[in-house]
Image (cartoon, rainbow, N blue to C red; front, side):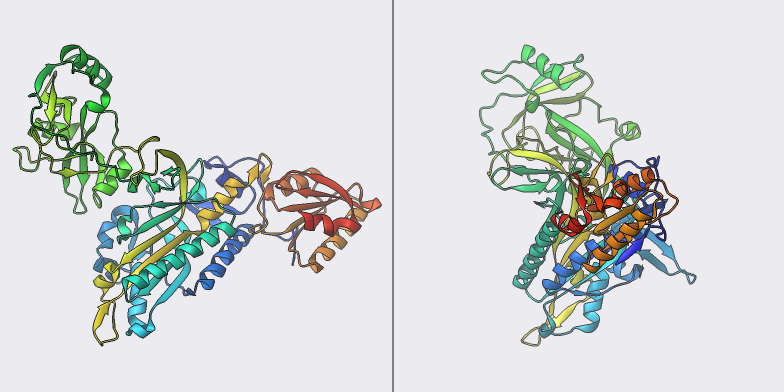
Length: 583
């Protein structure tokens, strides 16, 4: 197939768009692959659609090879299925809701668990019909508060989502593993490095949950891994819990006036001078920092909760959102402190906290705060701390919360060594949903004994448009894009330069030769465009191979570029096919 650039719907830009934040967004717009329509919303132009089609083709190949069947469900869906699973409320402001002319509620689907479950319920009724796995490639919609980074985080995006349906838990395990294996093949074929990490299921619910993360500097996720093979998103990391310590024999707490200690470091120094400990000086890890968080529940009610954690740690709000889901989480503000005068900012201690206390403010602690540990913390009085407050004797928390930050060097929970941290972007997610959605929507089938049993489900997503942006982010240089051959919109870009008809005649014969050898060719045949512009466009558009017919055309010589490596070689046209095949 040959596409002439003179007829292609394309305009390239010389300068980066002012609103683009990351390299992929800049290059995809400059090269005419996409065009921004609104924040987080893009129009797809011919070149962009060709890359999408290549990516989708690889995904379809592997999904069908794994036994999944393709369907297509609507993006505009009614409220009732999402109401049945409570996700109409749980999604909060994160989805687009709308009404039709009869005042009925609809939403633009952020995901399709409910509709797939209802589709299977409508058509299948026996264990003999299962297992079955269905998938679609469909646009999704989420009302991102801060859409950014071009296609990496948009409000309209394309996903491949698949759903498995089984009668037994063992069947779900098998379906899950089949999809997980298919994902590994997909990302390998796409040339994407990935790490499989344990993840939190979030609003999806269910039990087992794993993310496929692509390590990338602009990634929005932090994940951790050990040399021994442990890997997890920080939201799913579980802190190893130390053994409890004996309480008997521990000294009583001591009040510590400490007005001039604005930081934990100055507090520790002061404590080591005034109330030193034998053999083990106070450190930041021995201080109990009590952080006040405000939780906004789905019904709009606001609750304060105080989290106690070692003073050498900070609250990770992403982990806090998981710990207190589905509530929204933020740091308490000045108004919160004014309403709760017992919370003396900078001097909060656990002595007055707890659901059963007079304050009624829930108090939860980091897993490291176990019975018998002794702490330097606030005395709930301005300018006063207390040393030697013992957990399990002097205070008892309401529970444990995984909200503290995770750092390089922390131990892996499976004992496989210290952790290293990395940034990554989610490219796929696999869930064992179990029976949550089937129970809510009444998806049951008759088993071998004629008894109705609830179906168990799995959910498997891949971000198609995000992957396209990640590939653009990974394959470029200072001149433009440099697509790998398996996703490039064309195999070869032929450029005719100069005013002499000889170059155009040679380029035309080359195009015919490449087309005959089953290459997909983009032919820059524009007659009134300067060689400089044509060559800059060839670099910007990023096809794997560029063939330039120009000054050497009269001698039957062309220049062949390997776009990825930057190598450029002059070859006789009689050896062109060999040179193209080599690249």
